[in-house]
Amino acid sequence: MSNLIYGMHSVDGAVRGNHVDQLYVCKDRNSEKVMRVIEAAQKNKIPVSFMDAQWFKNNFNDNNHQFIAASSKNDSLSKLSLEDFLANTIKQHFFLILDEVQDPHNLGACFRIASAFNLSGIIVPKNNSVGITPVVSKVASGAVNHIPFFSVTNLSRTIDLLKEHDFFIYAADGYSELSIYDQSFSGNVALVMGSEGKGIRRLTKDKCDLTFSIPMTGSIESLNVSVATGICVAEIRRKLQ
Image 1 (cartoon, rainbow, N blue to C red):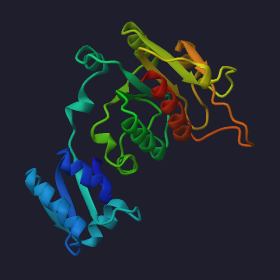
Image 2: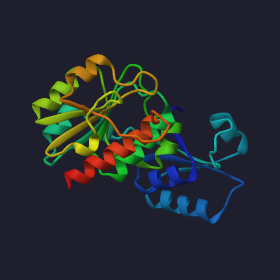
Image 3: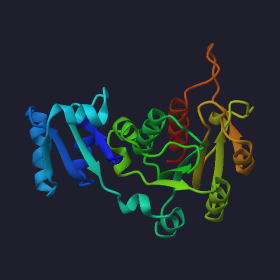
Image 4: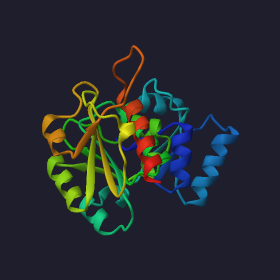
């Protein structure tokens, strides 16, 4: 049951958005919050199963499941190829590209950032990247249900595809002498962020049109990838509007 999501906030959002095909609640829990989720499930004709506490322990170990879970649908949103998505949407796009990010907490946080700043989607390479897991879904607090997620075979060719659709590709690189705050942003934009340990791969960086850094004045020389993503996305979105 690898498509399980858990936690009150994540499950509530997924149920109300009709993105799950089964709701699981602990038969000994009947709080007002749980009852509201059950009512939403019944309204959307989502089956509800009442499980014992051991079922939650078996599936989620000591994670903070709050005795509520759901099995998520394989929505067409995730099945649609990036090429088809670009061909069937007419708007200014802003994509986030994560180059081999492997920490599920970072990916979940990036989903929340993408939702907060109305990004078009998140793109990751299939190899050496975390996908959508229960931990990602919980950290994302429902954002995985409405932010398109594209897992691609070849990131370099994907960047070429974006350029064919008039995208300008930016990369955040701590070694760049250019500041993000000195850049202007317009049109279709994609932002590349690197992995937790190695940063952006050289081949990926070579495909980008421009690299910039986040100026820092304190003693810390680097930021967590999701924190850096939030800063960059907020600045780009501010200038795109």
